[in-house]
Amino acid sequence: MKLSYRIRLLMVVSGIVVLSGGGLLLKKSLLPDSFGVYGPYRADAIVEAALVPIRHGTNAPCFSCHPYEANIHKNGRHHSISCEFCHGTYADHVDENGKKFGTLPVKKGKEITTLCLRCHNTEIKARSEEVIKTVAMPDHLKKQVVKLTHVCNQCHHVHAPLKYIIRAKQITGLMEAGS
Amino acid sequence: MNRRTFVKHVLNGTIAGSLYLVRPMGAASLEIPEQIPGIRGKAYDILNQNFVFIVDITRCIGCGSCCVADKREYNVPDGNYRTWVERYVKGFSDQIYVDCPHGGLDGYQAPRTDIEERVRDTFFVPKLCNMCKEAPCVQVCPVGATFRTPDGFILVDEKRCVGCAYCIQACPYSARFLNPVTKVAEKCTWCYHRIRKGLLPACVQVCPTGARKFGSMKDEKAEVYDILKGPGVLTVLKKEMGTFPALYYKGARREVI
Image (cartoon, rainbow over all chains, first blue to last red; front, side):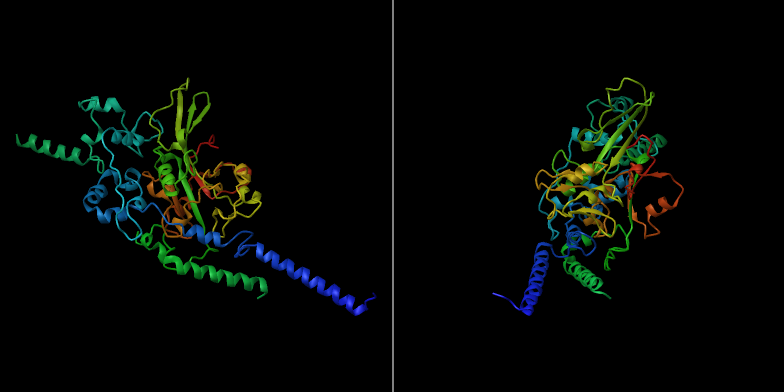
């Protein structure tokens, strides 16, 4: 069978159209939406990354429900410490509607000493006096003439470490003046 | 306007629109006072941002708060670290001893006892993603799952990542790991989700001494702006690699790598 020139031309042109169109459609079906908006990646991934819910609140929501602790914490030397470091994350405590659903553990006894010494141990030499006050552990207890079994929070309020110390000094100062 | 720019504009519009619609989802986080000014209450201009992270080594006390916060914020599987704190000990013979037990997650409770010589200097070096301008991890990704956003963050698209781990080998800072649960590459994002809500990264938020600083260079009142503008010596890690990190170190000794 001999085809005319026109029919052959039509077949070639339609072949090109079908193949290229199909190729374009195939490419479109394989590429994810929003690919290539800013570069060779899915731009929607940026939006997804931005929408991940947070787990750490700041100190502000803690303070709004715990005003007593907040007052001590804000006025003490430990004001720069995040509540969540010692107590756990906001997301484990309060749900999206602002309702409490979980109780955060409170550190007790020796745990507190361990926690304090994470920052305040003199033995780790990288802690400059400008940044933090450090103590060497049995030495500090001996120097203050207390039992070696004492834990830190028997003298220091954990939220404001000098609260009781200053108060005690005020009281003893008054007594000395009065007697 | 040609077709390409038209399509770009339309898509930008849809992205901005979709952001606007879903914003109330994070309503609880919006009640928290803003920490990075200039992000909330207006459309986020993704093409015109410049964020900087500064680690002040002279203030780091190695408490590991940042590591704990990071693990909690992302539920990072045990044995992997998005951020970690290394301890450098320098002896009088100029020998350097570096250790990092549990990535600093338990803090540093005791000094090193295995060093024979007298110790000259001890310091902590917090490490995290350097957010390179010329990121090796982005260059090697075969599927476009790792990319640098127009606002300067290197992120991982976990839906596209095939877990080939090329990027993990490519990263000169060892900031990446393969998540054993999801089997995709994961790394520090400087808490991109928090920044877009106007909050500081979790590690910066919990740092008790202000050793980690974060801010926008577009904000002239920001602490990082003052530091970068001032005369203080700032260094980046592995400068010779030509990665141009956006993470600066203040007070880093030359031994820090």
